[in-house]
Amino acid sequence: MLKNQEGQRVPNVTFRIRENNEWKNVTTDDLFAGKTVVLFSLPGAFTPTCSSTHLPRYNELAPVFKANGVDAILCVSVNDTFVMNEWAKDQEAQNIVMIPDGNGEFTDGMGMLVDKADLGFGKRSWRYSMLVKDGVVSKMFIEPEKEGDPFEVSDADTMLNHIAPAAKTPDQVVVFSKVGCSFCAKAKNLLSQQGIDYIDVPLDNKIRGKVLGAISGEMTAPQIFINGKLIGGAEALEKYLVK
Image (tube, rainbow, N blue to C red):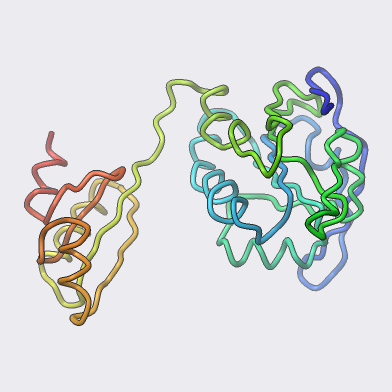
């Protein structure tokens, strides 16, 4: 049974990290001493849930964590530093400190080292997250021990809700647009003026009508979605933003 480590100090470990083509030693004191840190640990870099949800959401919410007293967010995996560095580049995870626990020493010390030999993974970390204050575990969320790779409680939103229940998370905004469209430019400008980050998805002439028709019921660009809700075109967005 995986044991909750709340109230305990994190293991004393030195991590070997490759930075600017040079080897560097980073200790747990370097990472935790005198700091408030959120750490999440996962089975492996480049694996599906880790890449699609776990890491990206922590990276996205990092500014909100920082505004609520968190000094750093660490991602730990039983992978070597080269793999973790490449994964960070692939994910554009500039807000996350990637920690390669290649020998599994930290994970073992946390009591979270599990056998995934059936997948050809060898020893890996069970999925969990924790809030650490000056090296002491303040709160720990451990995924339930059941078959597969459960992902229910170690997510970024659960941790943020524990730290700051009233914190406002950024909206999820997507703009489906076309190149040279003045209405698309207007919509993106409106969002930028409001300080709202968005993902721009330009569609070419061959597929634009079918794609927009399928997802929004409209054939014209832009079509804007916020938190999964269709807002519509530039005029509809303008009305939405002045509410």
